[in-house]
Length: 249
Image (tube, rainbow, N blue to C red; front, side):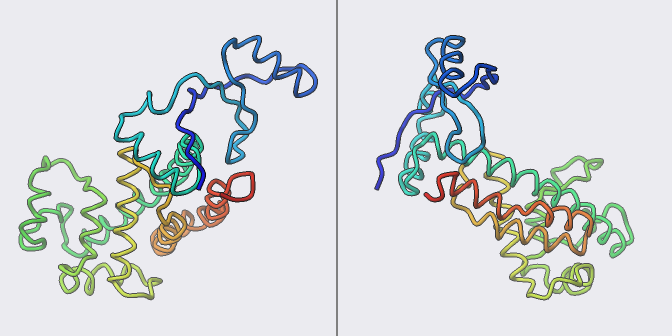
């Protein structure tokens, strides 16, 4: 197993230099940025030039650095390599989950308004169990946006008879598997979404499966959004980032 490289210099964009030839460009860049180590095409093939001056263990809390070291060693990557790739994966996944969350929230709000015959369906007495109702009661009355975790709860066993059968299932006719499978996939999606929001590592999470699930759900919610995600070929992009330009880990 490869020993993880524990340092990364702060990444800054170095402008392209018109000097002909790679050696000429590198010399010009070093002259322009004294003391910087110029790296052409860092791992992952993202085509950036990085100037390195700061160790990753200096810019992150010690517990976070240790997590990066552990996961980097497990994946036979240097810490700086893992940091770059995880950042790219987080950006791609976050953008997709944003599209999913906005559309799902709108869809469930509309479905629940029709089902309960009120725009304030979150506060309908007896609709949610007390433990879940308490989440809503702490929100200001004018605040209508619920967290993605709450929407996920609506697909759990607790609401199979009360919400899934009469309301949610008919609104998702393309979903051919069980509600429990939907809830399990949804829970994984929420977990990854929250990890990204808290700047945690998602490198080894099943991102392709999670994004495929989001696309599958969107087929009944917003067909245009589902088709847009399909056209982006995210699985290929994720695999390319994980494998890097060198062809393997």
